[in-house]
Amino acid sequence: MSKKELLLVLANSQKNGGRCVAGKLLTPNGNGTYDVGRWVRLIHPDRREGEIPAEMTLIDDQWLAPFDVIEIGLDKAMRDSHHPEDWLIDPGTTWRRTFYISKGDLPQLCDDPVDLWGKDSAICRRVPVGYVSQMTVPATLRLVAATSPCAVRGFIEDRMDGRGPRVRVRLQIPHEGVIHEFDVKDLAFLARYGIEEIVRKYGRFELLLAVPSKVGFCLSLTPPFNDYQYKIAAAIIELS
Image (cartoon, rainbow, N blue to C red; front, side, top):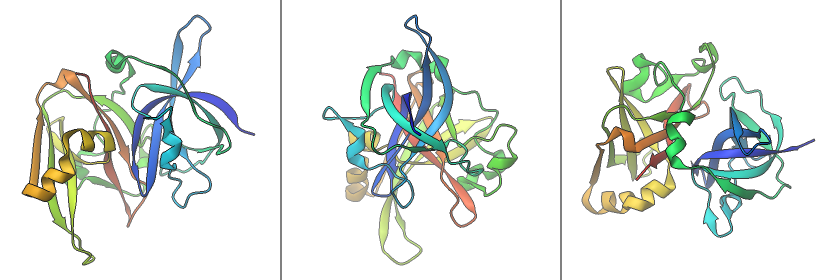
């Protein structure tokens, strides 16, 4: 039986033809404050890879965005060792936006990872399947604040399967002496800067996020694909 929960949305990113919605559960204390709980990635039971239909993330004619708080129906945990935060939703429960949390609260909401999923794997943008289950605290979702300037780069990449070129956009985050790379799947960020159109026209795009205090990131690992889980920037959160 499903249960209604409050979710602090931290990502509404691209996943196949739909969306991947993830965030942290909130528990009201009864005095107007909330305890911030565990990460949850929402999985639709009727979709091939669990993607959320895009129209479900359009509430009152506005797309869900980081720091929205919504009421949802959660069914049960998927208990997937590769993706421990995955929960099935009740597709019959209509989502309702309840309130917003200030982006100024980002520092208090951030996680504090020792590294961004493996220093040795950073250059390849991925970790091997089995890495997550061996972590001290298995996790495939993290909210982090920038600690140094970060870069977003777009370019054209030839597909290995012969289907022609495609646009790639990657976020580079320096962390503990290593530059980690994440494929950018934040549709709102991509649209805000017109990145894909610029890459198609000029062949490249570069943006320096020069002031660390003004940006944070919701980072994710994909489900296993060809023996690896790839690093994703699900949301790039600009504070001004």
